Length: 345
Image 1: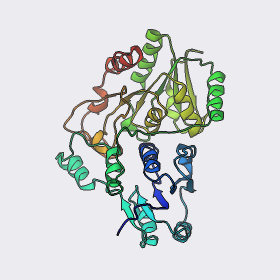
Image 2: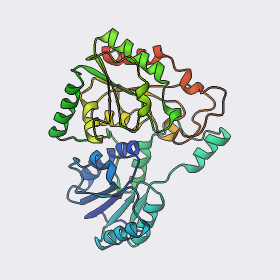
Image 3: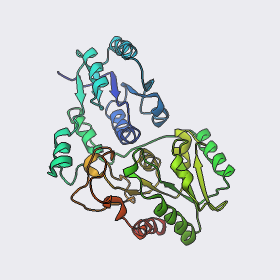
């Protein structure tokens, strides 16, 4: 289907997940530069609206509830059809986005193609057909190649309002945390992606002792396993869980000097607000879309024949031990943190 050289109304869809949407934010600035006068609308799940609501490169952010009925989704699709978009960009490529594509079948479209076959061969046959340069952000930009939108100097970006940043400072103050501080994201949706909590606790203790900075464990009310943390000296190391929404959590990250985190969306959000990270990768890798983007950030991982073993890190480890996480030492993480905090890298 032929594209207009100057589309006036553009619809982009990516419904989830947190990390994927954070990486996708890298395209919005380039889209606006390419089509400065166009209406650029973005469709996302309501729970992730705060990732893009402050993005001035978008004209409108359209949200939907996480679990709408099929009837509700079809009604939304009909609404989009009535808007008569000139271009539809499907950056999700799932059932819902394909249904929307059917409703917009007369609209020129671009669709992100997931490397499903290559990942199947990698996970189950240990055949790696991915180039070393494979990055999720670059794949998004490849989708946009027909529009001559290029990834030069592109990076994930999240924009927060000053009032949100003040709320974050208030939360830190209530927990007796002052700057400078380091955030540790010991969380992840899947257990296999979490660095052992006891080791992470030792990382926090040694970071505090060596650099004389406060440390914050950040999480949601659902991250109940953080209740197992034992070493929490007042004013030095704090556990902040269930006290902040997504936007406020990102604002807390923005106030920190360093984030040490597992492969979870908030780690990528930290980079999107300009914070350097130490990213700990176990069952996932750059082939699954994981990996840092910041120039000074560092990824700590082990090269093993069995990793990556799944797209989300949700596959039960079939080896005697989960070597991809257990073999990463505390000293390796501290060394990466030291390079960043002392400016050695």
